[in-house]
Image (cartoon, rainbow, N blue to C red; front, top):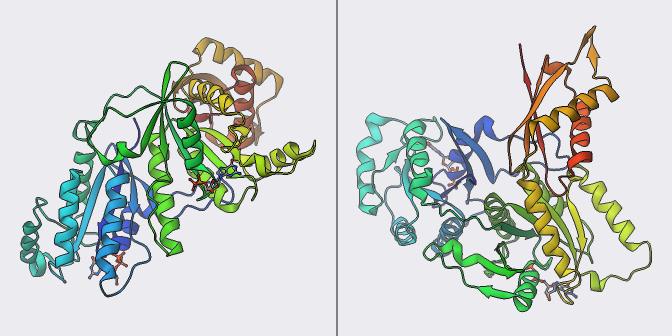
Length: 438
Ligand code: GDP
Ligand code: GDP
């Protein structure tokens, strides 16, 4: 099951960023083998008790005064409603209840998404607790007093959040259909790709009614199979603030990727691969999703016999950490290689969920160790006893060893390559976890 997404929404200056940073704290991990990808402080992976969720800060650049506040808040709330499973609505005990709070509360209530109401800046219970009761008037249930600054009240808040993240509470439908997120920069051609597919194939309107999120999913039937496409383009709002657009685009990408099995990263061939593409690719990589890189607008590129080769090299160089990704050159305008996209999707979906038998796996391990001696340090040599696949999506292997210090990155990579030589696993990352056996 995909990790729930929790978004923080509220007026400017109520303390959204402070709360986000305090909750994220040490949890904001920068994945070290994703070079060039520094994690945006827009989202963070959080663990609380046995639950994991992704926290999103919908704040960012905000107006400081005037009528724009309300329209911007509506926009922000709408993004949260569309992308999150649970919403933390943050208000400010010092400013008290204001009209904008009521308006946003209305929107949130109508969305029927679970909302946790948090009242911030309750730095001192004796002084401020009584003032939190007026927030009952929002009709969003119990107000949870917190202090983002002093990290007070977090336990109760997180308990409430994870309670609402419970799969039963989310009524997660058991949808076995593969989910594909089309991700990439604005104007790369994401919507055009989906439209082209729609033009050529039978379209089914999603029969899961209700949540706003389904509205942005497109179900396409091909060769008797159904595929759910999650479009991140959506929502063509006329926001002129570049930073906001970028923030929204990251939020939508995180949310779409979280829900998908396979991500298709669309690159604009007329621009080549850019830093922003790498950043978006990093989101999918970190989340262990199947990956296809589609170089779009191929019809616009003047080609000779080396063009594909040059494009391929450049992309492989920039995205060196995802050498497993499949690569395809397409045109949403002409439909070039569209049938092949579906073949590729089928293969990647299958690989992403592939299970390898323990027996075969250990034959490979024994052979690998025999062919290349494991590293040693100060007279102690790495021993690899046993390997087993513990999960899929992505395929994850645990290898039992004598000493984790000795399991260098390069040897892990070597083992991964041996597994790939036998089973392929094209288009999917595989994770190898080393565990010490005493
Ligand atoms: P945002 O605009 O909602 O993201 O708000 P910020 O996180 O930028 O915080 C706005 C202001 O409120 C900053 O000056 C914070 O230091 C302050 N603030 C945030 N949390 C608390 C808190 O728990 N107590 C107090 N007293 N101030 C806070
Ligand atoms: P999105 O923002 O990623 O959804 O991008 P769009 O699908 O809106 O495409 C942006 C622009 O590129 C539009 O003007 C499209 O007509 C154009 N476009 C998209 N794909 C192709 C393609 O394969 N070839 C050409 N020539 N134009 C394309």
